[in-house]
Amino acid sequence: MILTYHLEKWKDREIVKVELMEDEFKGSSTIVPERSLGEHYKIFVAVLEEYEGILKEAKSSQIFGLFERLEAHFPEHPKVLFSLSCAMLELFSSRYGIKLEEMFDLPDFEPEELDFPSGDFLIFPEMIGHVLRVMGFMSAMRSFGERVYLVVREYPDSNTNFIVDLLKKLSDGFIEEEWR
Image 1 (cartoon, rainbow, N blue to C red):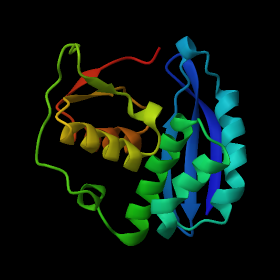
Image 2 (image 1 turned 45 degrees about the vertical axis):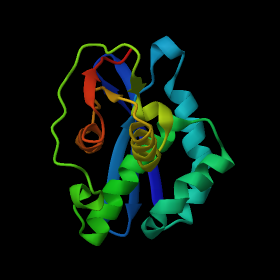
Image 3 (image 1 turned 90 degrees about the vertical axis):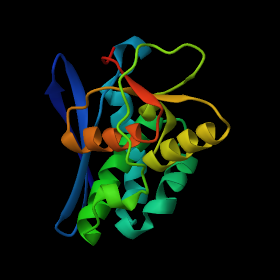
Image 4 (image 1 turned 120 degrees about the vertical axis):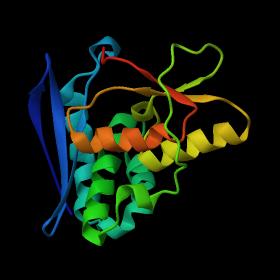
């Protein structure tokens, strides 16, 4: 698998566009640094460079264990893992001809946008890590009777936005927020 990344301008900020390629198949996503958290694109590029060695030896068929290996190698970078997992899901989907919607048994539910709910769990998917962990966390919290709301932000790429839309179906509703 080949990992490529480069900087792009989006709105008033620099973002990191990530692509994973295997043969003629490709998956892409983006990482959006948040200024309010003191994040800068250089941090994410350094993490991607650390992950590159593991990813070049990996295959798309290893999707279910790969992100735990990456996290064990260089932990505490959930935004990078979220972005890479979005790209990997697109790569896996196109390589094996499986629609992303069919990969997960999601309820046929259209969540509604809500005002800020108090006392409930707000989930920022890019702060948890890879997509499968986000899904598991949301399902676990709901199984304990907690109400789970997804905080949705617009991404610069359609693939990540599509995956966030799929994640909405596992929530009790969502809140739209701008990048800070």
